[in-house]
Length: 202
Image (cartoon, rainbow, N blue to C red; front, top):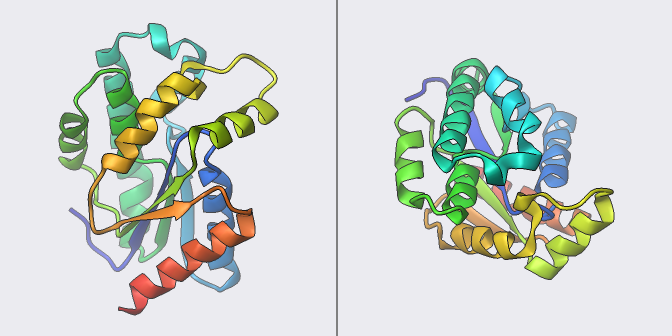
């Protein structure tokens, strides 16, 4: 699927988990240590990613098959234009969300989780490491409410996040590392760095 010596590090978690903050801090840590690295997020900046963000407040009214297609097309663009080129240059690629988000979130809307993963794996490189920043639902909801000035979107509602979190915790792979995200940010970041160092020293 890919060539070059680059490594793909993915950060996943429910809304309110702190994964974006941690992924950015980890990116800075690598940069500070003179490691060639890139940081990307999904949805990306493609026309499909922009469409997804424009429709974010209405996502529960969009047919699930359309939602699936938007995310799939956006990811194809991201893989072709961001992820694979950076890996081929030998960079550490850090991703804030990947196809596991699609599987767990769209799975919570009723789609088959395995089918979503299988479709994405047809063109998406596998992560070398996936950090699942896990928090309980009350913690996530408290963080969401403290940072939002408008009513929570579907993806940020408690009943929905319960399903999403279960989907995440049901994922099984050797490259998945579950990190307790309830702790202070510096403690979470240290755990990520320690897991990263241990993995790549093997």
